[in-house]
Figure 1 (cartoon, rainbow, N blue to C red):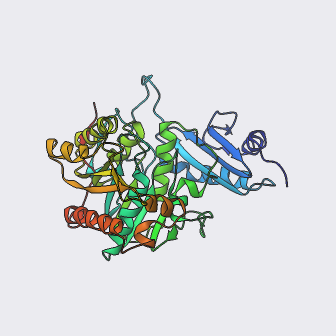
Figure 2 (figure 1 turned 90 degrees about the horizontal axis):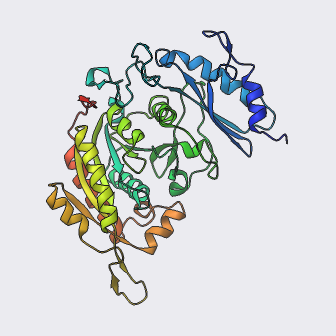
Figure 3 (figure 1 turned 180 degrees about the vertical axis):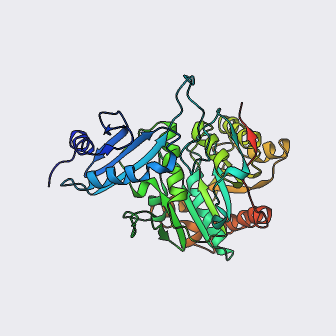
Length: 379
C-alpha cells in the first residue's frame, strides 16, 4: 500500500483550483492543520468570512482530490473562516454558518440570526473548568439516563482535541454520507452520536486553531442527519477558552451542567466555567461532584481521596442546584474503558440510579423549554 504523507496530500491539493481567487489551494495558502497517519487525512481550508457556506463545493473538491490518492482510507476536510487581525480596513463579515456566526469579540449573537436547530430538542452542555474530572464519562451516562426516561437522545463530542466518545461507546468505523452532503450519525445503545474521533484515528493529534475547531463543530451540528431529538447532550471541551465561549454563543443551549471533583484546585476552574456560562446568559442547570469518594471493593472502607463535599458547598454558595455525587468506583472505570457505559450495561446498579436521578432533575428544568440563541455582546 502506498504511504500517504503531507507532501503527497499537498501535491493533490495543488491540483484543486479556487475559481474565485484564481489559484490552487496550496499556493494561495488556504490549507492548514494538515495531519496524516496510517492512511487517514485531516486538514482545514481557510476562506474569507464573507464566502461562508458558499465555499462548500471547494471543500468537497478538496476531499475528492485527496480521497483519490492511493492508500488513503479516510479524508476529513473542514472549512474555517477567520477575521483579519486588527481589521486592516476589512468590512466586518459573519463566519461560515449560513452567514450568521460571529467570532468572540467581534459582535453580537442574536436569536434571530441563529440557524434553526429546533430538531435537536433541548441542547444540554456538559462542561468542566479543567480536564481529568470525568466529564465525558458523565456526559455519556447522562445521555443514556435521559434516554432511559423515554426520550430520543443524541450526543455530540465537541472535544475536538481529545475525542473520547468512540471509546466510551465502543464504536468503530467512520460515518457514511450517501448523498455526499450530509453525514449519517453513528449509533450505540440507542443514542445517535457524532465525534471527530470517528474521522481521525485515536492516536492522531488534531493540531488546529480555534476557528478551525469551530468550523468542525459547526459542520458536525449542521451537516449531520440527527433526525428529530428530544435532547442533544454536548460533551464540551474542558476549560473556558475561545472554543467554549464561541460554542456557548452560537449554539442555542438550553443549559449547562458543570462537572467537578471536590478538591480546591478543580473547584477553582469549575467556578470559572460557571461564570462563563452565566456571562453569556446560558442557564447553569447544576453541578455534579464526580469522584466524590472511594469505597474499597475489598473491605468496604471509605476514603475521601479528593476531599469531599466541596461541590455541594460551592453550589449552595453560588445558588446553583447540586445534582448529586458520583463515587470513584472501579465498575464505572471498567465499563467506560470497555465501551459499555454503566447506565446501559448495569442499569439497576446504584451508580446508574444516581445518574438517572440527576437526569430527571436536569430534564425537569429544560424539558418544557424552547431554547433560542442567547442575545449577548462580548466585550
